[in-house]
Image (cartoon, rainbow, N blue to C red; front, side, top):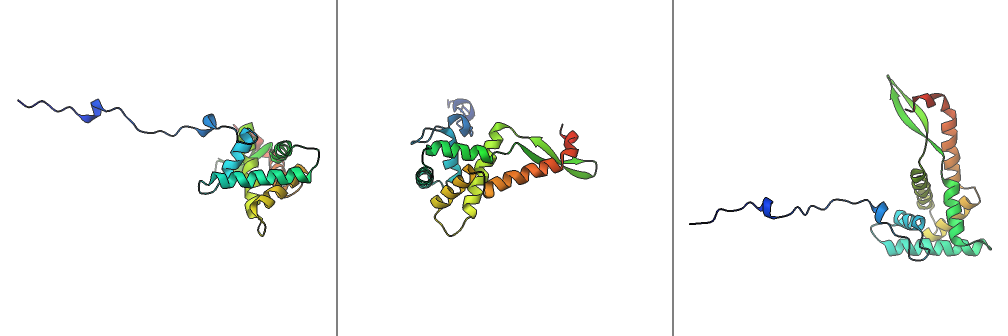
Length: 171
């Protein structure tokens, strides 16, 4: 007499892979052992070429260290990121039939993400130079509180200031 078949669903465990947040598993970069530098390298990276991104970032940090004597390149990098971080941003809020630009405070995590994204975007926008040189120039400008990234931050704050009348819509 033949045995009854068991369904595969009961005997096999589910092996469905779920995405896990990389924030929890993110490790510091190999040279400075810093999470911010590691996130920055991941933003610079294109097509999964992490070693290329690491070479770009580390050579830019080396150039910055030579430009500004008496400061560690990591300190310059972190100060540049802090200088670009915006405190406020405007978000669209639809009330009735109108859309308002409502100023809102930003979490620390989003501040950092926006700062890194803006710096990388401005570096990619600079043409005619190697990426490492452009990155060194952009970080140097951000450290000196000038340049395109700082201009973006100031524009963001101006937009929030101009629309503070609509702050009561932020609920």
